[in-house]
Image (cartoon, rainbow over the protein chains, first blue to last red):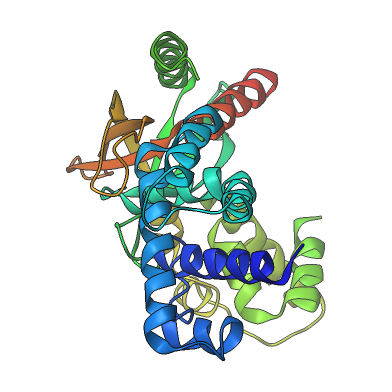
Length: 187
Length: 140
Protein backbone atom coordinates (compact mmCIF):
# COMPACT_ATOMS: atom_id res chain seq x y z
CA UNK A 1 0.00 0.00 0.00
CA UNK A 2 1.37 3.40 -0.98
CA UNK A 3 2.69 5.70 1.73
CA UNK A 4 -0.15 8.22 1.33
CA UNK A 5 -2.81 5.53 1.60
CA UNK A 6 -1.11 4.02 4.64
CA UNK A 7 -1.09 7.39 6.35
CA UNK A 8 -4.70 8.09 5.47
CA UNK A 9 -5.83 4.73 6.85
CA UNK A 10 -3.91 5.40 10.06
CA UNK A 11 -5.62 8.78 10.33
CA UNK A 12 -9.07 7.28 9.79
CA UNK A 13 -8.38 4.61 12.42
CA UNK A 14 -7.29 7.31 14.87
CA UNK A 15 -10.37 9.43 14.24
CA UNK A 16 -12.63 6.39 14.71
CA UNK A 17 -10.88 5.53 17.98
CA UNK A 18 -11.39 8.93 19.54
CA UNK A 19 -14.86 9.62 18.13
CA UNK A 20 -16.53 6.25 18.56
CA UNK A 21 -14.41 4.02 20.78
CA UNK A 22 -13.80 6.59 23.50
CA UNK A 23 -10.01 6.35 23.19
CA UNK A 24 -9.41 9.99 23.96
CA UNK A 25 -5.62 9.78 23.78
CA UNK A 26 -5.87 10.06 19.95
CA UNK A 27 -5.85 13.85 19.90
CA UNK A 28 -5.10 15.94 16.82
CA UNK A 29 -1.61 16.69 18.16
CA UNK A 30 -0.94 13.01 18.69
CA UNK A 31 -2.22 12.01 15.26
CA UNK A 32 -0.28 14.75 13.50
CA UNK A 33 2.95 13.87 15.29
CA UNK A 34 2.54 10.19 14.48
CA UNK A 35 1.27 10.36 10.90
CA UNK A 36 1.91 13.75 9.30
CA UNK A 37 4.75 15.31 11.27
CA UNK A 38 6.06 17.34 8.34
CA UNK A 39 3.01 19.02 6.86
CA UNK A 40 1.65 22.41 7.87
CA UNK A 41 -0.84 22.61 10.70
CA UNK A 42 -3.53 24.16 8.48
CA UNK A 43 -3.18 21.43 5.88
CA UNK A 44 -3.44 18.79 8.56
CA UNK A 45 -6.60 20.34 10.01
CA UNK A 46 -8.13 20.46 6.54
CA UNK A 47 -7.48 16.73 6.03
CA UNK A 48 -8.84 15.80 9.45
CA UNK A 49 -11.91 17.94 8.97
CA UNK A 50 -12.66 16.59 5.51
CA UNK A 51 -12.36 12.91 6.39
CA UNK A 52 -14.10 13.24 9.76
CA UNK A 53 -17.03 14.69 7.83
CA UNK A 54 -17.02 11.82 5.36
CA UNK A 55 -16.91 9.24 8.16
CA UNK A 56 -19.77 11.02 9.95
CA UNK A 57 -21.95 10.74 6.84
CA UNK A 58 -21.14 7.06 6.45
CA UNK A 59 -21.85 6.37 10.13
CA UNK A 60 -25.06 8.39 10.20
CA UNK A 61 -26.59 6.41 7.39
CA UNK A 62 -24.95 3.19 8.53
CA UNK A 63 -24.21 2.77 4.83
CA UNK A 64 -24.16 -0.68 3.36
CA UNK A 65 -21.58 -1.30 0.67
CA UNK A 66 -23.86 -0.30 -2.21
CA UNK A 67 -24.66 3.00 -0.56
CA UNK A 68 -20.95 3.47 0.10
CA UNK A 69 -20.13 3.05 -3.59
CA UNK A 70 -22.71 5.62 -4.59
CA UNK A 71 -21.39 7.97 -1.93
CA UNK A 72 -17.75 7.53 -2.97
CA UNK A 73 -18.60 7.97 -6.64
CA UNK A 74 -20.31 11.27 -5.93
CA UNK A 75 -17.31 12.38 -3.88
CA UNK A 76 -14.88 11.48 -6.67
CA UNK A 77 -16.94 13.43 -9.21
CA UNK A 78 -16.98 16.61 -7.14
CA UNK A 79 -15.63 19.73 -8.82
CA UNK A 80 -13.80 20.96 -5.78
CA UNK A 81 -12.07 18.89 -3.17
CA UNK A 82 -12.75 15.66 -5.03
CA UNK A 83 -11.67 12.35 -3.63
CA UNK A 84 -8.95 10.41 -5.45
CA UNK A 85 -9.44 6.74 -6.33
CA UNK A 86 -6.72 5.81 -3.85
CA UNK A 87 -8.45 7.73 -1.08
CA UNK A 88 -11.73 6.06 -2.00
CA UNK A 89 -9.99 2.68 -1.66
CA UNK A 90 -8.76 3.60 1.78
CA UNK A 91 -12.31 4.55 2.80
CA UNK A 92 -13.62 1.24 1.47
CA UNK A 93 -11.00 -0.63 3.46
CA UNK A 94 -11.71 1.43 6.57
CA UNK A 95 -15.46 0.85 6.34
CA UNK A 96 -15.01 -2.90 5.93
CA UNK A 97 -13.16 -3.13 9.25
CA UNK A 98 -15.06 -0.55 11.27
CA UNK A 99 -18.66 -0.38 10.06
CA UNK A 100 -20.15 -2.88 12.51
CA UNK A 101 -17.88 -1.98 15.39
CA UNK A 102 -18.77 1.72 15.17
CA UNK A 103 -22.47 0.92 14.90
CA UNK A 104 -22.36 -1.31 17.98
CA UNK A 105 -20.45 1.37 19.85
CA UNK A 106 -23.10 3.98 19.05
CA UNK A 107 -25.86 1.60 20.14
CA UNK A 108 -24.23 1.02 23.51
CA UNK A 109 -23.55 4.76 23.91
CA UNK A 110 -27.24 5.52 23.39
CA UNK A 111 -28.38 3.01 26.01
CA UNK A 112 -29.41 5.30 28.82
CA UNK A 113 -31.27 2.81 30.99
CA UNK A 114 -30.04 0.27 33.53
CA UNK A 115 -28.19 -2.75 32.15
CA UNK A 116 -28.15 -6.33 33.26
CA UNK A 117 -24.50 -7.02 34.08
CA UNK A 118 -24.74 -10.58 35.31
CA UNK A 119 -27.18 -13.34 36.15
CA UNK A 120 -26.26 -15.91 38.82
CA UNK A 121 -28.47 -18.71 39.97
CA UNK A 122 -28.64 -21.86 41.99
CA UNK A 123 -31.19 -24.56 42.69
CA UNK A 124 -32.01 -25.39 46.29
CA UNK A 125 -34.00 -28.27 47.62
CA UNK A 126 -36.14 -27.47 50.65
CA UNK A 127 -36.47 -30.52 52.84
CA UNK A 128 -38.44 -30.59 56.04
CA UNK A 129 -36.64 -33.02 58.29
CA UNK A 130 -38.49 -32.73 61.58
CA UNK A 131 -41.94 -33.44 60.22
CA UNK A 132 -43.28 -36.86 59.55
CA UNK A 133 -43.14 -36.34 55.79
CA UNK A 134 -39.97 -35.41 53.93
CA UNK A 135 -40.92 -32.90 51.24
CA UNK A 136 -38.34 -32.30 48.56
CA UNK A 137 -39.31 -29.04 46.97
CA UNK A 138 -36.80 -27.60 44.50
CA UNK A 139 -36.51 -23.81 44.26
CA UNK A 140 -34.54 -21.66 41.90
CA UNK A 141 -32.69 -18.76 43.47
CA UNK A 142 -31.68 -16.01 41.06
CA UNK A 143 -29.38 -13.05 41.54
CA UNK A 144 -29.51 -10.19 39.02
CA UNK A 145 -26.69 -7.66 38.96
CA UNK A 146 -28.16 -4.47 37.50
CA UNK A 147 -25.89 -1.53 36.75
CA UNK A 148 -26.89 2.10 36.42
CA UNK A 149 -26.21 3.80 33.06
CA UNK A 150 -22.80 5.37 32.50
CA UNK A 151 -21.31 3.75 35.57
CA UNK A 152 -19.67 0.36 35.62
CA UNK A 153 -19.23 0.47 39.40
CA UNK A 154 -22.73 1.10 40.75
CA UNK A 155 -24.54 -2.22 40.77
CA UNK A 156 -27.85 -3.23 42.36
CA UNK A 157 -28.16 -6.85 43.38
CA UNK A 158 -31.69 -8.23 43.17
CA UNK A 159 -32.20 -11.66 44.69
CA UNK A 160 -35.35 -13.72 44.49
CA UNK A 161 -36.57 -17.28 44.45
CA UNK A 162 -38.98 -19.02 42.15
CA UNK A 163 -40.72 -22.35 42.40
CA UNK A 164 -41.29 -24.54 39.34
CA UNK A 165 -44.58 -22.84 38.58
CA UNK A 166 -43.14 -19.33 38.67
CA UNK A 167 -40.18 -20.38 36.53
CA UNK A 168 -42.57 -21.89 33.99
CA UNK A 169 -44.29 -18.51 33.80
CA UNK A 170 -40.96 -16.79 33.22
CA UNK A 171 -40.12 -19.29 30.48
CA UNK A 172 -43.41 -18.51 28.78
CA UNK A 173 -42.45 -14.83 28.86
CA UNK A 174 -39.08 -15.70 27.28
CA UNK A 175 -40.83 -17.60 24.50
CA UNK A 176 -43.24 -14.72 23.85
CA UNK A 177 -40.35 -12.27 23.60
CA UNK A 178 -38.47 -14.58 21.23
CA UNK A 179 -41.56 -14.85 19.02
CA UNK A 180 -41.93 -11.07 18.89
CA UNK A 181 -38.26 -10.60 18.10
CA UNK A 182 -38.52 -13.09 15.24
CA UNK A 183 -41.61 -11.27 13.94
CA UNK A 184 -40.31 -7.72 13.99
CA UNK A 185 -36.57 -8.01 13.68
CA UNK A 186 -35.80 -9.47 10.30
CA UNK A 187 -32.08 -8.75 10.16
CA UNK B 1 -18.83 -36.45 57.61
CA UNK B 2 -19.84 -32.78 57.58
CA UNK B 3 -17.27 -32.00 60.28
CA UNK B 4 -14.51 -33.47 58.12
CA UNK B 5 -15.59 -31.21 55.25
CA UNK B 6 -15.51 -28.22 57.62
CA UNK B 7 -11.93 -29.02 58.67
CA UNK B 8 -10.94 -29.47 55.04
CA UNK B 9 -12.39 -26.15 53.95
CA UNK B 10 -10.75 -24.38 56.88
CA UNK B 11 -7.36 -25.74 55.82
CA UNK B 12 -7.75 -24.87 52.16
CA UNK B 13 -9.70 -21.64 52.30
CA UNK B 14 -8.80 -20.02 55.57
CA UNK B 15 -11.02 -18.72 58.30
CA UNK B 16 -13.11 -15.97 56.69
CA UNK B 17 -13.92 -17.98 53.57
CA UNK B 18 -14.99 -20.90 55.75
CA UNK B 19 -17.26 -18.63 57.77
CA UNK B 20 -18.75 -17.40 54.48
CA UNK B 21 -19.41 -20.98 53.44
CA UNK B 22 -20.91 -21.86 56.81
CA UNK B 23 -23.21 -18.84 56.51
CA UNK B 24 -24.78 -20.42 53.48
CA UNK B 25 -25.71 -23.64 55.22
CA UNK B 26 -29.29 -24.29 56.25
CA UNK B 27 -29.97 -23.89 59.98
CA UNK B 28 -30.64 -27.56 60.68
CA UNK B 29 -27.34 -28.69 59.17
CA UNK B 30 -25.45 -25.96 61.01
CA UNK B 31 -26.91 -27.05 64.36
CA UNK B 32 -25.99 -30.62 63.57
CA UNK B 33 -22.39 -29.61 62.86
CA UNK B 34 -22.15 -27.56 66.06
CA UNK B 35 -23.41 -30.52 68.04
CA UNK B 36 -20.88 -32.81 66.35
CA UNK B 37 -18.06 -30.37 67.13
CA UNK B 38 -19.03 -30.15 70.80
CA UNK B 39 -19.37 -33.94 71.02
CA UNK B 40 -15.96 -34.61 69.46
CA UNK B 41 -14.26 -31.98 71.64
CA UNK B 42 -15.79 -33.50 74.76
CA UNK B 43 -14.69 -36.93 73.57
CA UNK B 44 -11.11 -35.75 73.22
CA UNK B 45 -11.18 -34.21 76.67
CA UNK B 46 -11.05 -30.65 75.43
CA UNK B 47 -12.11 -28.51 78.30
CA UNK B 48 -13.81 -25.96 76.10
CA UNK B 49 -17.21 -25.24 77.48
CA UNK B 50 -19.22 -24.19 74.46
CA UNK B 51 -22.54 -22.89 75.60
CA UNK B 52 -25.21 -22.14 72.99
CA UNK B 53 -24.49 -18.39 72.97
CA UNK B 54 -20.76 -18.93 72.58
CA UNK B 55 -21.40 -21.29 69.70
CA UNK B 56 -23.35 -18.58 67.95
CA UNK B 57 -20.74 -15.92 68.53
CA UNK B 58 -17.72 -17.95 67.63
CA UNK B 59 -19.12 -19.36 64.40
CA UNK B 60 -21.75 -16.95 63.10
CA UNK B 61 -25.08 -15.50 63.97
CA UNK B 62 -27.85 -17.98 63.20
CA UNK B 63 -30.01 -14.99 62.38
CA UNK B 64 -27.53 -14.02 59.71
CA UNK B 65 -27.76 -17.50 58.24
CA UNK B 66 -31.52 -17.25 58.20
CA UNK B 67 -31.43 -13.86 56.49
CA UNK B 68 -29.15 -15.05 53.72
CA UNK B 69 -31.32 -18.03 53.15
CA UNK B 70 -34.65 -16.18 53.14
CA UNK B 71 -34.54 -14.52 49.76
CA UNK B 72 -37.26 -12.46 48.18
CA UNK B 73 -40.03 -13.85 46.06
CA UNK B 74 -40.53 -12.99 42.40
CA UNK B 75 -43.94 -11.33 42.30
CA UNK B 76 -44.14 -10.17 38.71
CA UNK B 77 -42.12 -9.90 35.52
CA UNK B 78 -43.14 -7.60 32.67
CA UNK B 79 -41.40 -6.96 29.38
CA UNK B 80 -41.36 -4.70 26.37
CA UNK B 81 -39.67 -5.05 23.00
CA UNK B 82 -38.54 -1.74 21.49
CA UNK B 83 -36.45 -0.58 18.56
CA UNK B 84 -34.07 2.36 18.59
CA UNK B 85 -34.88 4.05 15.28
CA UNK B 86 -32.67 7.09 15.08
CA UNK B 87 -30.20 9.10 17.12
CA UNK B 88 -28.16 12.25 16.68
CA UNK B 89 -25.08 10.27 15.64
CA UNK B 90 -26.84 7.66 13.56
CA UNK B 91 -30.04 8.25 11.62
CA UNK B 92 -30.41 4.56 10.82
CA UNK B 93 -29.97 3.09 14.29
CA UNK B 94 -32.20 0.06 13.73
CA UNK B 95 -31.44 -1.48 17.13
CA UNK B 96 -33.97 -3.70 18.92
CA UNK B 97 -33.86 -4.03 22.71
CA UNK B 98 -35.82 -5.76 25.47
CA UNK B 99 -36.79 -3.84 28.61
CA UNK B 100 -37.78 -5.82 31.66
CA UNK B 101 -39.46 -4.82 34.89
CA UNK B 102 -39.14 -7.22 37.81
CA UNK B 103 -41.18 -6.90 41.03
CA UNK B 104 -39.72 -8.64 44.08
CA UNK B 105 -41.25 -9.01 47.56
CA UNK B 106 -38.62 -9.26 50.30
CA UNK B 107 -39.19 -11.62 53.27
CA UNK B 108 -41.02 -8.85 55.17
CA UNK B 109 -43.42 -8.39 52.26
CA UNK B 110 -42.04 -5.08 51.02
CA UNK B 111 -42.26 -4.72 47.24
CA UNK B 112 -39.40 -3.38 45.17
CA UNK B 113 -39.34 -2.80 41.41
CA UNK B 114 -36.28 -3.14 39.21
CA UNK B 115 -35.93 -2.21 35.56
CA UNK B 116 -33.21 -3.00 33.07
CA UNK B 117 -32.60 -3.06 29.33
CA UNK B 118 -30.96 -5.76 27.23
CA UNK B 119 -29.81 -6.02 23.62
CA UNK B 120 -31.23 -8.97 21.72
CA UNK B 121 -28.02 -10.92 22.33
CA UNK B 122 -28.08 -10.20 26.05
CA UNK B 123 -31.73 -11.24 26.17
CA UNK B 124 -30.94 -14.53 24.44
CA UNK B 125 -28.27 -15.24 27.02
CA UNK B 126 -30.75 -14.42 29.80
CA UNK B 127 -33.33 -16.70 28.24
CA UNK B 128 -30.75 -19.51 27.95
CA UNK B 129 -29.97 -19.22 31.68
CA UNK B 130 -33.67 -19.47 32.55
CA UNK B 131 -33.99 -22.61 30.42
CA UNK B 132 -30.91 -24.13 32.05
CA UNK B 133 -32.45 -23.48 35.45
CA UNK B 134 -35.67 -25.18 34.40
CA UNK B 135 -33.74 -28.20 33.15
CA UNK B 136 -31.88 -28.59 36.43
CA UNK B 137 -35.08 -28.04 38.42
CA UNK B 138 -36.74 -30.85 36.51
CA UNK B 139 -33.97 -33.34 37.21
CA UNK B 140 -33.73 -32.56 40.96
